[in-house]
Image 1 (cartoon, rainbow, N blue to C red):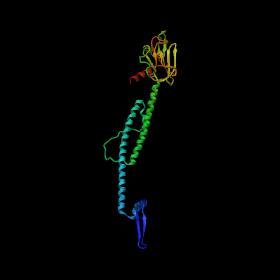
Image 2 (image 1 turned 30 degrees about the vertical axis):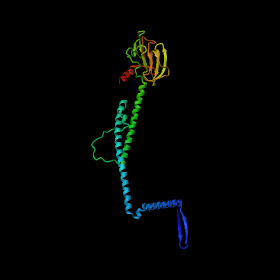
Image 3 (image 1 turned 45 degrees about the vertical axis):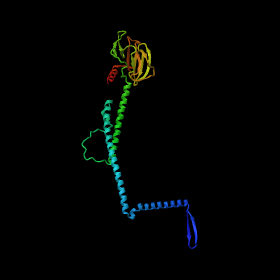
Image 4 (image 1 turned 60 degrees about the vertical axis):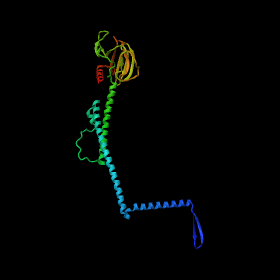
Length: 310
């Protein structure tokens, strides 16, 4: 593009050539100027609106602020209502947790005063809904804090119950309260009796389970095998240590399926019935000893019979 300037005084013509680059630079400068002026006037209008006394602008700002504030209040109210509903659900779950804890405590044999020592007393609640009001944020915060403390108390109570149940489970696991064989033990009970070989009065330190040869024999409790031997009187003998100075003996077996050092579980098969050693026929001779002293196995076996009937 060319622009020609003509001077009357000099009667001459001057030509200026405008290229596309010149056009782009001019348009860019014009656009930048417009943006700068717009930004400047906007800044002055908002910054000094109160000073320049523009009523329509002040009304507009107040309307916008009021709308934002109302939206914020609505949002808070809605969230408070939702949180209040969740809080009510948590309180209902807490009540169910209390009931479950009571049943577990009763099952585990825990005393009621032990539970009350770590939990607050439980009270019934109900009644008609009259003049309901939305909770405020501080009120909701207080309720949440109170619920948090209650949950901590219930957690302590459940931990106490769990500890009690675990302790009872370990105690049962380590006590010989499982029948070592599925048979009656009335043939020859613990205590003084007439010896079947000599006819003399002699002490019988265990109980006998008459059964066919090969009948499975099970460990009466969890423990470690501490002795496996062929004894002249006991025959093939197994002795298991259950901890706390409690041991059990299984005598006259035909087969032995464990060895010294074997860790056995409650009810694990360890041998088979036989008639080895000093025996008049196939049976299991079973003993329970505490610190090496023979005890009456009947009290353990009776507990095993009651446990099997549950």
